[in-house]
Length: 173
Image 1 (cartoon, rainbow, N blue to C red):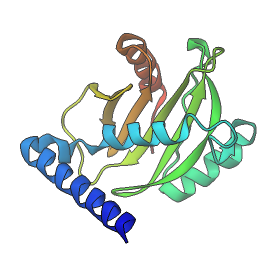
Image 2: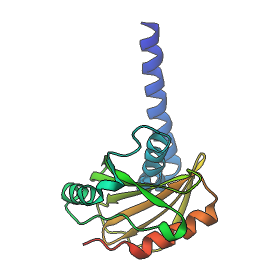
Image 3: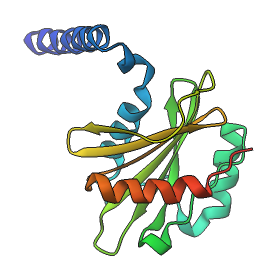
């Protein structure tokens, strides 16, 4: 019973803290994309056994499945020139429906994720935005009704360079 009370208080405190934060920072509710991307990165990138649902070796199946679920052609950008190889992808729940997450790693094992989500209303603020969620840095942007967020525990300048490379390759239907 005591454990249940502690759990309930923890949930209530978390909800209250989120509401207080959003009240103090109105953009927090609007820009949930970097928070969600960072959380998904933190949850899945450390997983050694199953970091993705579909591995890069089955990329054709992964792209077809994610595209069907997201109702638009979704392909992972090629970042091998920058030293990052695709591990694979997964489907996640999002605020506006399904979300795709692509995971990459470099030769040292450093992982990076690209979070792709449909936006409810087209955004007019072009360009990259930066957010830091604890140890995870996130560069995010919007294009043609889609939100993209590149997340990793790496220096901001390096992540920006990778985000620019990814953005150049992304062209949703």
